[in-house]
Length: 319
Ligand code: MN
Ligand code: MG
Image (cartoon, rainbow, N blue to C red; front, side, top):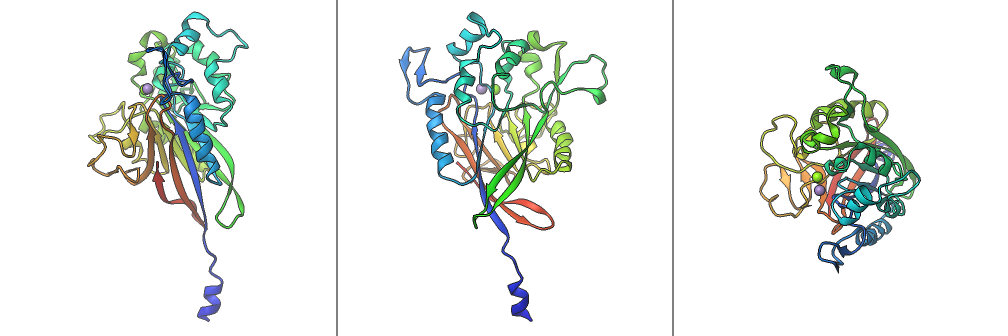
């Protein structure tokens, strides 16, 4: 009887999903330092593009996200915002480049607001991938939080065909959330007052994670333009990655804003519940890829499917 029973045991379906991230590119497309007027092969999306291609080619399953602070931060960004402008039909050169790289989704960073909302809208409508932001809402001026409408798409549920270790294909439903520091309301007050409001990142995660789950998300990835600190949250925190890791249902955190590397970056050793080698925050897989395209960050998420609970993260390693 025991051998008959064991022959019925089906090995769980397992696969690895590589979740790749660029962040804080700051309009560095070419391998060039415009401030010093010289070639710099350590920076630029042209460099990251090669890293993306290599990382993608090495695995069966991958997705690619950008985490914002994209359109500002180099003379190229300033030129298109302040000198030439973007007339309808003109594609921002940053998106001409990014549109070649098969991004799955992108998040809005704080510097996206530096040139105002109409420039931002005109720029990102050229992207051939969707933009999300889960904590920026239209300012309707009525002091009623219940009826606030998101300014951007608040989240994305995307179906991805993936291949398991036995070579069988599956449809994985990936939920994405995107966050920006609510401090945009001070930093870009002149551009934003009366137009949008920004809410607490964790509160919006708690609101939208159950919505994504109800819509059938198998895993949920938070793209947080937000750094990592471990002191107690005060509410409306600028650096909320640690607090987001405490939201039940978030499986991975692609973070940024701090212009540092995680795992491995200085300053992240010895933090409570932070694994600076494996790349986890409170047990949740996490990565941050530095800035200006110097690095590609990625998380190899080991996923396992078992009925009736469905897909779960069994292990991870961030690079
Ligand atoms: Mn930045
Ligand atoms: Mg930033």
